[in-house]
Amino acid sequence: MTTRDTRPGSTGGADVPDTLYGGPDDDYTPEQLAAMSRQDLDRLGARYDGVEIMHVDPGPEPGSNLERRAVRQVGTVFALAGLFAFLFVVVYVGSGWFLPDWQWDITEGGWSALFTPLLGLFMGLSLLCVGLGLVLFTKKLLPHETAVQDKHDGSHFDRVTAGATLVGGWHNSGLARRKLITRSLALMGGGVGLMLIMPLGGLIKNPNKGNPLGTTSWAEGVRLLRDDGSPIRPGDQEPGSLETVFPAVPGGNREADAATMLIRLRPEQVLENEPREGQADFSFGDYVAYSKICTHAGCPVSLYEQETSRILCPCHQSQFDVTQGAKPVFGPATRALPQLPIGVDDEGFFVARSDYIEAVGPTYWNRERI
Image (cartoon, rainbow, N blue to C red):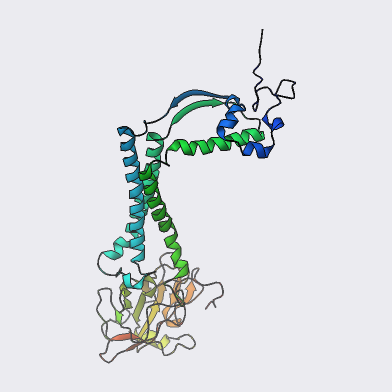
């Protein structure tokens, strides 16, 4: 004789023509099912919904030495994640974006080279500890179960049962009684959360105020310095020579957008020189100064052919005529190199008379091409 399991459930008894055992979805409203505990759902047949438990490992015995050791390990790793996250915040705040009084000089010594690597190091260690802590918690403290489950029919009873199972999983995790882990999780969550939102501070207090794309460190009275930091006087260069110079400001010789070519023209070039409109007084004697940043793609235009009076960009072969206001005469560049107005100070050293009157570097969409 063959018998059937006709107890109520998502599948049990559903194939039997009996109104009493058509399943919980027929016997109870969705609101009634949602209000039931997991134990009530089990009594209605949730345990007969096609799940076959193959193996259960409940994990370490509560209160045992093994559990306490695992809790200490997981708590320590989570706490380290929070600690590294707070160190990231300390380094970031030290940049002066939020608290100017805390600002460290990142342009002197080795700090400039360590600032960004330290941010990456502390963020990486924090996220690594988060992952390691989750792995340890899962392997050492959560119950392990091997089960096989048939595909659900998608009934409301199944959905409610799945929700109750998730709630039961939270209780089975033991977090409610493992205070060390919950405290370390709070520390980790606060530190990691703060670490992740700190970079957004640039949207609130951006140090690049004014017109950072259209200005450089050059200004009236700023001396022109060689790469070794020495100032330059007229007569220090031979006719036809080029010297790369930087502004005499803190960190000036490290600012790529301020790199400038100081060129001493040969006598015949002086006669041929035709400055651009409004820039006739930008030169000083037979000296002219142009931006070293190519207006095509921002490459350094470091080659100068004095015989042809052309400045060459080695990246894409753009060429600029130094006797025509550094206008482009060949290649993809469409805009002249900006010219720096220069003069001399009371001590006879070259100085800038102002910043560039136009932005250096690649062309903007709405910028005039000359």
